[in-house]
Length: 257
Image 1: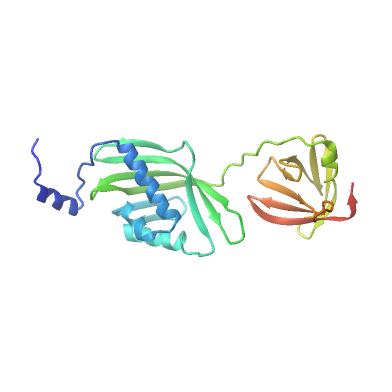
Image 2: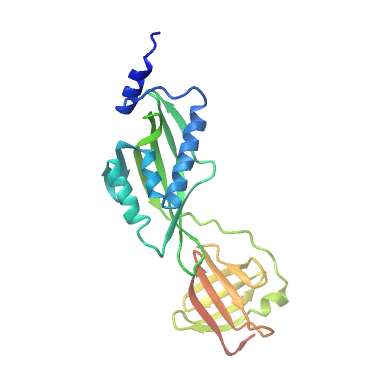
């Protein structure tokens, strides 16, 4: 095999011709590049983000369409991910979902599922959705870069209810009673066997305990936080959906059971 003179090899690399990557574990190298890229994404380090794209990258999004070129994609991230100072976006791969498939021509296909989280002032971080990704990495200009990206199957994250604990009947009875809010109207909380039952009009919902004051629904990500003033009796419920407070329900006078 003929060797390529060093000066010619440097010209080829400078021209964007794909040279062979260093010998070693391709999967480890691509996964390391992928991890480094997402660190720049999560911190909005836009000056570095573009280094992980080829000049002719094509980004296909099932909702947003096609974005072509490195400059256009970095500008899109700047505008849509990093443009709101009151909203921080964080991406995280779903554990054990990411797979790598070596491809001919110094390429590798990285596929998997990932989720996106949002943090806003005064609120806990919450998950906003998940999607599938197919990223084609190429060894070009002396490093691994993405040249084709497919982001699709965007949807809400499937709800997996936590494991309930059992509370004594006396602990459940303290929480039972009649409550009301401007948003939800009147509702009744009653003891129903080993859990609580919420009734409001035609709605009936079983509430299962996470702790003596924290309950959840199994149908969707709804949490019910029973609260009391210091040293007092339970007088309100904070209702959270996907981690965000969506209602505050107060106990009605004489509503204890």
